[in-house]
Image 1 (cartoon, rainbow, N blue to C red):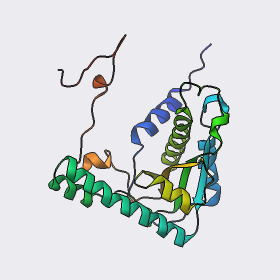
Image 2: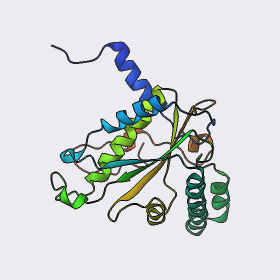
Image 3: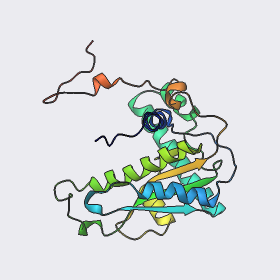
Image 4: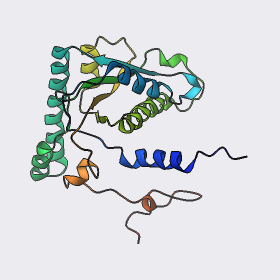
Length: 223
């Protein structure tokens, strides 16, 4: 007895994985509330260690608050550019400043994905690997991302922010932590390749450089 999906269903799954993109360019078209709920339910179906479900999603519906979040991101963008200039060079810093790194003011919906508070109470699967709560939230974000792509909705994960400042802005309790600012919205088109590749910022590495067997091997630079 086979539990595999049909060929068409399998093809759809592999297609949405391959065509998911970290989007930065959006249309202001609103997302219907029922569709947003559908996407959030997909996120909520994510696996979590010990079934702790550490994800919390804060929907940003207030325009002034959205502006404040954008300001935090823009401040961190400048700090990141300075750090790139110090580690690499000023030309690379200028290249970074030309990149569009977020679409907070353009997209239809902004969500902040967070870790819940009181996570220390959850021991199952976390005694030696406490970061598994973050892994669980990442799974929820990926579920949301793939579901959004299947629905023709673009999503961008923004990580350029000071987590303590964002937590204060959102009145989050002690112990809770923002993980990602998620921009969701309709788009003119999806990038054919990751935007950082299209912009010439970096290139993707092949799977062969990431795959090892029976122990650690440094495959980088090998033919």
